[in-house]
Amino acid sequence: MVPNENNQSENQIFLPQQLQFQEPINSLILVYLPLMKSHFLKFSACNAWENQKLLTYISGQNASEECFGKFSHIQLAEKVWLSRLNGNPLVGVNIFESLPFESLNGLMTTNNEIFPKLISGLDDFGATIMYRMLNGTETKSTIAVILAHIFNHGT
Image 1 (cartoon, helix red, strand yellow):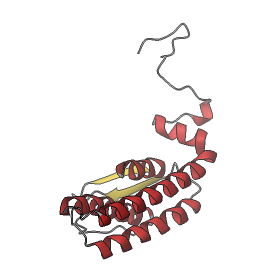
Image 2 (cartoon, one colour):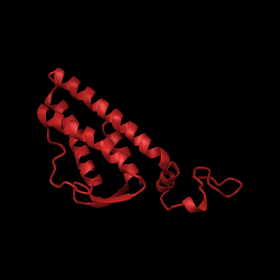
Image 3 (tube, helix red, strand yellow):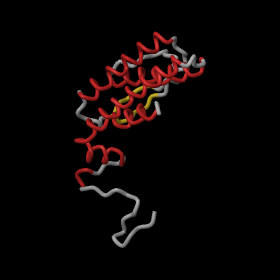
Image 4 (cartoon, helix red, strand yellow):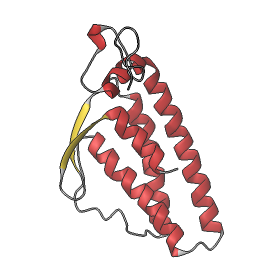
């Protein structure tokens, strides 16, 4: 990064002092907080629509086990993330299990119903959540980063 005439780097985001944090993502979250609920509700609706379209397509095409396996992975991963966001993390879930159509449809329907309820109840998308990854490593992320990851994962 090359400083400009004010000795500020051109690739940095400069915010008022009261909004500056060590992690740039937290600063952005605070600035855009009023828009985040609407943003993630739209992503949730789009995710539900895409999930339904994809399940309808693969169920009508005599899709391979691999197709059901990949879609199962997406839905099982969403279930794990939802459990973390709700404060009841699941353990021992095999996110690479291939579910039969009925189970997959039920899980997808449940996930699609929970996301908008969860998002509607959130007020602090910059809050940090501590959780264990499936390999046992403890880590943390903000709710906004987690939701962005979830909705990007299915694309």
